[in-house]
Amino acid sequence: MLKKYLLAPGPTPVPETVLLEMARPIIHHRTSEFSAIFDNVRRRLPEVFGTKEEVLMLAGSGTAAMEAAIINTVNIGEKVLIIDAGKFGQRWGDICRAFGMDVHKIELEWGSSVKPEAVEEFLRANPDTKGVFVQGSETSTTACHPIKELAEVIRKYDDTLFIVDGITSVGVYDTRMDEWGIDVLVTGSQKAFMLPPGLALIALSRKAWARTQKVKNPRYYLNLAKELKAHKDSTTAYTPAISLIIGLDKVLDMMFEEGLENVYARHEINGQATRAAVQALGFRLLAKDMPANSATGFYLPEGFEGGKFIKFMREKVGVTYAGGQDHLKGKIMRISTLGYHDAFDTIIGISALEMGLRKFGVEVELGSGVRAAETILEDYIGK
Ligand SMILES: *Cc1c(COP(=O)(O)O)cnc(C)c1O
Image (cartoon, rainbow, N blue to C red; front, top):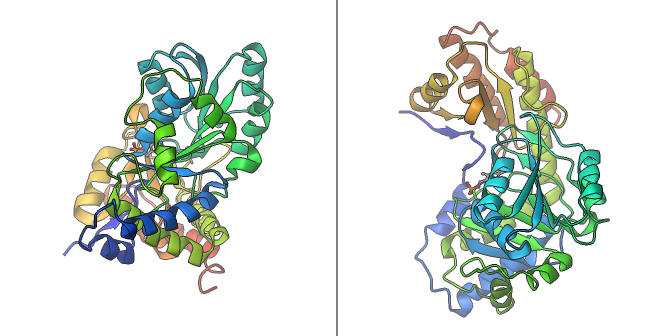
């Protein structure tokens, strides 16, 4: 037998109660039965985004919400600023470029977080910028960007929208879209929302909704105004991801039963414990100033075959971690603390890491990472 543990930052494990709910016979979506579930989700989802606006549910992965954010708020040819500090920042740029926007970038070394002053400087020189695009947590580097501070800068510019990929920060951090001044906030189902992939979530501020009316880009499937109208009628424009929305209803039961503040605190303590553990094992964190609580990335020893190690751990040990992307492939690895993850998931991840590394000739001391994690988690458990 090989028992499996999924510790990659998406897709993340799905709780058994949610799996069982989604395994029930499919229901039709143009029914009062589905609309009641849909409305139960609609009513509660905005609190996780920190907004009073509607959160739209699109059938698609997180990237669908990213594309929707762009094509509904910026005209082709208009100026945008991308914070590119990793794979997903790059994706904002790639999508904007694919549609022909005038793309400007602040490029940062992977692991770095953008300085709000750098954005301010750009906007002062370029007040015609229509959107600033960033990640709440850049999953490829496991570093956060200072969203609240960035919002403070950007909200002073009437023509500029602040567009945040919160795919690994919504549900991990207390995110206050309305209060801070985020204009578009997107996420997906398979990260902090503990669901299989296939549901994209997106909310727009008043300022962003006003902009959608001025945008002339061709749109069809990802026409958000049309979706908003449908949502207000307790349905979606096209066939929704029925099973995932039924699952989301259960997930929200779990999140609100735990209490959102406790959900965020759980991510914080498990993030801290994981960082402490890998540092106790002698590894250097990839994130410089703002390590994320969604996942922890760290450098593997020089010359170590990271790809081979991750494959071995997944196939022979049963533990799935994530490796590095692009130029960091093989050089780093990432351990998730996202979603349906608690103290002993952290312990399993660190314990397996210690034993696995030794098989690959890395002389870590057995128990030293686990001890560091336990030291942080011991007061937390049993509360
Ligand atoms: C996973 C992820 C995405 C991509 O989402 P898909 O669901 O794979 O389309 C985008 N941004 C961030 C920050 C992510 O973690």
